[in-house]
Length: 562
Ligand code: ARG
Image 1 (cartoon, rainbow, N blue to C red):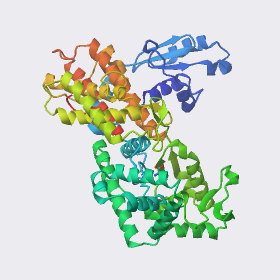
Image 2 (image 1 turned 135 degrees about the vertical axis):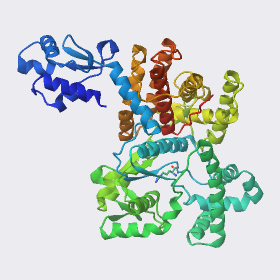
Image 3 (image 1 turned 30 degrees about the vertical axis):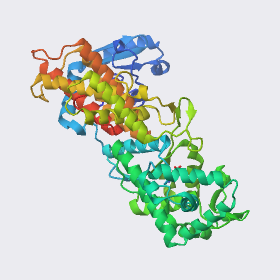
Image 4 (image 1 turned 180 degrees about the vertical axis):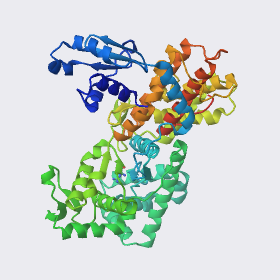
């Protein structure tokens, strides 16, 4: 039910169509305090035509409005305040939540349109960084939101599995590496070789020449080079997958940069045919002056293709494969220019669908106020962060609920959920600082707080030991009103989050709903045998359902007990 629309209609009718529905709808406000009602209409807009003071217009308008369906309608200065019929609204809202269950808030706006989401996309032989974590969890949540609203998301891990660095890695491995070492601890060992290479090549520039040769061999399909590359790729992927498993996140495709090796000639061909390629200092570029962008480097002096050339091939491949309605790239804000260039070149190539390509950037995570970087050694190993979070969760669960049956499983859901939630509650462009102790707290604006509220709702329902009926839910309790209104706002909140590609809207919503429910619970007794018992339990059940959906949309589990 769109109650704002109902209010707009009442006003239009009372004004005998002096204003159209759209205009009125857009003017309607939600008062800061519920004491001023649920909706307010400011009458200033009528002052000119009616030649009256807004205060007078408001009073007169109230007399014209059909008050049926409202608790009351009253003038307050220049405003007309509408108080919805709480019992009626509660009945409608609780009934629809209980009927739809986990489908509450489902929408069909997506029309089954496919939406590839380029997400996570770490680089082989390097640890997954906090930046990759952001991309992973934001991308995953966007996929959930898109699916909820009728799109078909396709989660693509565009692995960084090609490039000159593999020449260096092979050379380094041949010089200093061993199979046993790599097998025992692939990512760290490979990183170690790579770092050592960069140190030693300062004094031994001939190393670079060797690395170039290895990469050339790799590009030419040399057997040894290919085998090593494949091996590095698969051990890296295995260790990435351990982290994805911990996070509970899966992908539909792992087609990385290497997949496009044989698809770039076509890109270069199209650019040539359209006379878009220019030579500049021996390299081939596309001039993007008219977009106010730096030229896109398509081919290097030595003929090697570049990051953007692969992305052009990938974009075209995705259009052909999925015929997408939107194509998303969840990649850090430091690559904003890259994606502007990508879109501009696609546009120059004559692909009108370049308008459906969207970069979804996000800000940096800092650690104690400092930027993290692999080079400086300020890496936070994600695996370790997750394990520490799980440990912290376990400690708190042991203190709060020592008899919990499946404590390990719940600690996992809470610890990992806390890290994900913390990431997603921040607007994606905001940078934020990471402090694990803040993240795993059970109070405050945290994932565990929302999970705990949901578990508490479930525990009330267990105690009630009666099934909740969806029809008899005329809840008459002013304390519950905030919560009912939050529940009512859920479907439109989901649509807003999808439109803005902003999971934080759902995280903030969940925090508000949890807070209002806890307030309700502090002020009203639920488990009392009277004719409102079913209605109150319906509220509790509805909150539990909607908190669970919200958490799941974020990619966070909702344990029933914790
Ligand atoms: N591997 C890249 C990095 O770690 C991110 C790739 C993003 N996706 C893309 N299609 N360019 O920076």
